[in-house]
Image 1 (tube, rainbow over the protein chains, first blue to last red):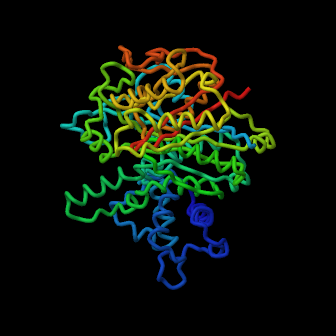
Image 2: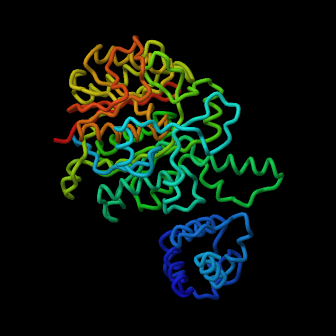
Image 3: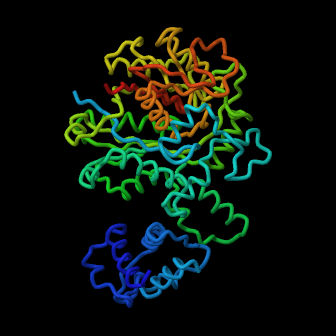
Length: 91
Length: 397
């Protein structure tokens, strides 16, 4: 799966599963950051991250291991799409 | 007077995922109660239960970080919603009532034990988010876009049956024409240890109504039904499985675990259901019993059945002999079984029943399923604290 397609799927997850206003996700790019508190970020809080990671597992058929430090992978869309592609490739 | 019909069924049981394996398993008389694999059982009086098979669970699409119970609930709800053929727009009006008790406790127990043993705070925080029983209703409503009333019923072992009763009342009162109702429960250490401590578990698979019965067996699973105002179902061309004619609810107000010795509360629940249905006791051909296999329950349930129905021709069987006591899911699973009995003219047997207790004056369908054309059937569920629910279903002609 191409990272561009993954980004589109994440946009869908944010609107359908996390119920984000489509206006908020429309201009989403690889450079967009996720965690609350960062300038120009999507503003995800800790519960949003759990919901997002569960939705990613269900959409992409992955298992995300919470015992590793996941924060760097959920920092930006660039990092997250790389992480998902790597997991999907079984690495 | 609105008629309430069932137009969709969904099940996760110790026979696997789906209504079909559940119904075939029950009718086969093959007991699904086996050694527990989910957690350590060394040193306990009873070490068996009806577990949902790991392979069936692994094949489900839901994230493994959801609680085991939520994964059961999502799978059973999906099957019911698809079976009923509900559109997105119809789902948006539907309400949901779920019977739950254990919630996501299994995962929280594992999290706590890890913390206690390692002295560190485990990272797996998502294990903590679905501990409360209302999580089941929350994830099901969210996943399937159910926009109507949402409730969680915590009534111990009658939770699943109570959810159907309350959902039917919402439809009957015209609050909403469409409800998803059911029960969800996964095995947990606290439940397993608690029932062992109460000495209510049989070391061998439970044998309801048997002279030598020594207690219940635990189980786990989920079941959902789509309940619908008949006019609403007809309007969208849905074909009902059966009608949920009435329910009777009562409380013993007697003891925290023991049923009332003269069965006053259970008699009132059954009588109330018959009265609300406008039926006589002779109209009921089959009772899907609560039938746990504890000395106390089976004795008082038989006493109540004899008082309400008279000794004799009534057919009675206990699904718990096959899948164990699935706790908050039990009433919903047994409602599905009762509905399929009406549809197929087939009564699943009571397994492990070698010597009928002389105090039980009924044909309890031992070992082998029984073809029987039944027009009206009752399903009983009695929870700790004397929380009694009787449901009456009628075959859809």
